[in-house]
Structures are given as structure tokens and as C-alpha cells.
Image 1 (cartoon, rainbow, N blue to C red):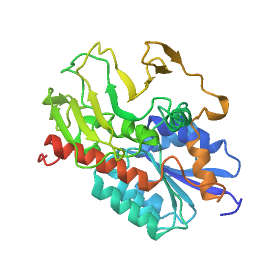
Image 2 (cartoon, rainbow, N blue to C red):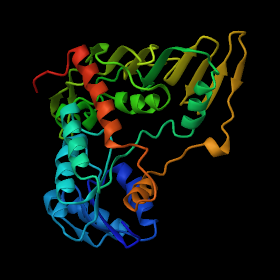
Image 3 (spheres, helix red, strand yellow):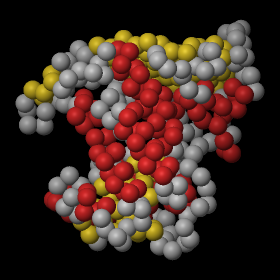
Image 4 (cartoon, one colour):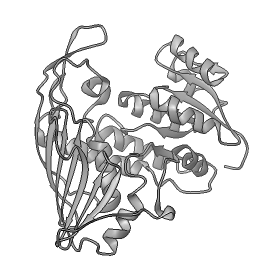
Length: 344
């Protein structure tokens, strides 16, 4: 597409959409957000007034049907990602969809198939942002043999809090809204495979749901079908092994949000809590890795999406094909742990 004005509609204006997508899209020359549809007419109007968006829609279907739109940004919870994406692509509109990609792997596969059927349209998932500053450096260090041959990877995605049975229900606890997405599993896996490649499926997993019910927004008890503690064991296509832990019950964990890559001659540790990458050697020495400016990544989701629509660059963070891979891993973990087929 050439440099004519791109007209965008927003379906779902949650916190990330308001903090990132809307203002950063509006800052790009030649981009206009002309319509928004949120969960209610009242919230749609509030968002429109806050950001100067000229039109609202009462239903997302009405927004998709708007012939004036070139692209749709989907900022809803996962339960609407597939329906809105499929409708938008069928209507000839480019799609930027919030993570996680879908409710399950089958939905993600339908989304990918629909995008492949319309190759002239850009289809992109909002990427995992946590490791962007370090991704290029970690890949380089592994390729240069900084840790020798990779043997094992530990990934810890812990809330850092002790068990809180009285915490209110969120969409992440609700299978009807989030599907098989489990805590931070998909978003940490997506980041890790940028360095390591993918894990062979199936995997082994163990999960627990310690809080069987939580209070919904109306104060009523609501059953929980998503684990608050999950351990996964797997093997990379390279032969290295993996352990991942996602937990909301491991208070005071000494490795709350860490990636550890163990090799034959060293270990890389990315500590997200400290925003620090370290190289540990067999002699006990430890080096804080300096990130060269030319390797330091940053959030540029909206810019990449618009550039891809305009034909300036391909989607790298994150194409639908990669979204499907992390949804297949997420579902494999759920099936291995026995909660994928829980009736709700």
C-alpha cells in the first residue's frame, strides 16, 4: 500500500490499547484512528473523547463492516481474537491483534489459514515485550558459543506473591475469556524461542488450581479452571531440555522472573526483576553483559505494523505463524497437565 492515509478502527480499548496502540498509532504521519468499539457504548464514547476519535460503533461487527477502514486493531481479551480477526480479514482489512493470539491452537490455526488466504493483507500479533532490549545480544552470544553447547533452560514466571485465595477474579482466571492461556506461559515462551528455537511436542506438565473459586466483579463466587501453579518439562529441537514454571503461589521465590540458559562452558541469566543480563563462568566469575546500542531492541509494535502495511518491512514481532506455535505449546502444556478438557 502506498503512502495514502491509513484509516484504523479499534475493537477493544483496554489498558494496553490506550497506553500504547492508540497514542503511538496517532503519532505516525498519515495514520488516522476513525472509529472505536469498546465493551459498552459508554466506554466507547469515553475512549473516543479521550483520544479525539470521531466515531464509535455499538457492535464490533458494525465496525468491521465500515468500508472506510483499512485496518483493525483488536485489543479485546482472547475470546474475541479469532472471530474479529476472521471477519476483518474476510472484509479486506489489515489486522493487528493483541496477545495472546487465540483461545486455543485450533482458533490460531484458523486465523493463520485466513491470513495466508489473503497474502496482500498484513496480519500481526502484538509481541511479548519483556525481553526486547536483550534479544539480539542473547542470540549473538549463543551463536558465538559464549556458553558452549546449550544443555538446559530454566524459565521462571512467578508473580512473586504468596497464595492469595481472596483476590478477585480477573479475565486471566476465566476460561470463557482467556481459553487455554495460562498465566504468563505463552508470553514467556514466545520470548524464549527467539533465542532457542521451539520445543518438541508433546511436553510433560503438572498443574494445580489452589483457589477453586474467586469473586467476580459482582462479588459472586466464580469457579476457576486455570492453574495458579504450573510446571512444564520439555526438550528443544536442538536436544537441550527445558523447565518452565508459572506460579502465583511461590512467594519470596529467589528467581521470580528469570531466564537461565545453561551450557557446557557458561550460563546466561536474564533477570527481568533487575533488568540485568549476566554471564556466569565455571570459575565462579560473573560478568554483567553490556548491551550495544545497535543491538538494544525496543517497543515499536505500531511502527512495524504500519510499515508492514505500507510494504516497508516484514512483520518480525510477531507473525501469525509464530503465534500458532506458541498456542500449540500452550495447549500441549494444558493437555499434559490435564486441564485442557475440563468442562466449564
